[in-house]
Amino acid sequence: MIDESDQRHLERCVQLATDALEAGDEPFGSILVSADGETLFEAINEVGGEDATQHPEFAIARWAAEHMQPAERAAATVYTSGEHCPMCSAAHGWVGLGRID
Image (cartoon, rainbow, N blue to C red):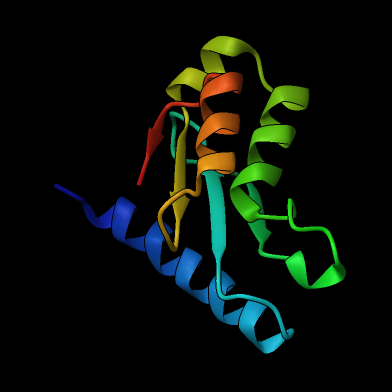
C-alpha cells in the first residue's frame, strides 16, 4: 500500500518525466528519498545526449554510492515513473539501495 508521502513522491516523478519529455527526451524521472522522507537526489532521463546509460535510476545509484553510507542506502527508497530496466536494476542492487516504488 502507498501512503500520502509515497503518492507525493510518485507525483514528483511524473512531473520529472514530463520535464524530460518537454526537453526532448524519453519520459522518465526518479527521486531518491532517505529513510526519514527527505528527497536527496532527483534525475530525469537524458539519453538524448547520445549516452544510453543516462537513465535517472542509474544516476541515482551513482549518486548514492558517492554520497551515502551502505546502511543509509539500504534504508532509502527510489521512486520512479517507470519500471527499472535491467541496467538500472543491476546498479540499484550493486550499490545496495532499498525499496523501489
